[in-house]
Each structure stands twice: as C-alpha cells, then as structure tokens.
Figure 1 (cartoon, helix red, strand yellow):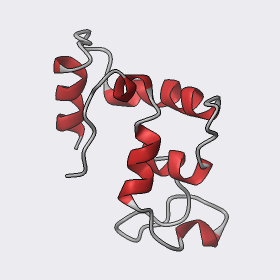
Figure 2 (cartoon, rainbow, N blue to C red):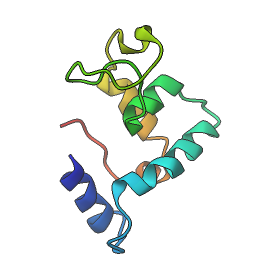
Figure 3 (tube, rainbow, N blue to C red):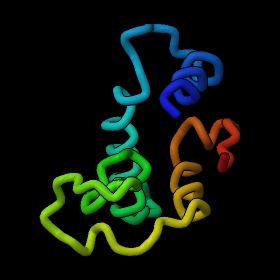
Length: 98
C-alpha cells in the first residue's frame, strides 16, 4: 500500500520532493476533514489515516484504552465517501477500492 500511495503522490498529485511521503500528509488530511462542513465520522477518518484504536487488522493491540474501538467493521464505501471529501479527490482524482 505504501508503494501505491507513494506513486499516487508522485504521479497524480505531482509531489516530487522525496522528503514528502504519504505519512507526511496524514495530519493535513486530518485537519481538512476535521473542519469539513459535512463533519465526517471521526472513527472512519481515524481508520483511513491509520489512527484507529483497539485491535489492528491482524488482531494486535494498538494501544487504545477502549476495547470497543476494535468492535465491528469499517465499510469501504463509507470510507470512500470520506476520502472523496479531500481536495485531491474533489479535483477529479479517482479513488477506488482495490
């Protein structure tokens, strides 16, 4: 996934500075979505950005103090709708599930 996102940054978004990687973008995206008028769900935003608590996808504890954070599933379509709120997606960058 890291390779795919890196290629997307270089080829689609046209960010060529090698110091800028996808991880650098997470805080900016978090701020954009936190202040978006549609007020997307925080748990879905956190999942998209890799900040979700509870258990990770392989069942390992990721440091959350709330066991319920690991319950349930995150629907891809719900996450896609949130991703489409970001500026890159609104400029016509096609976001699709793998």
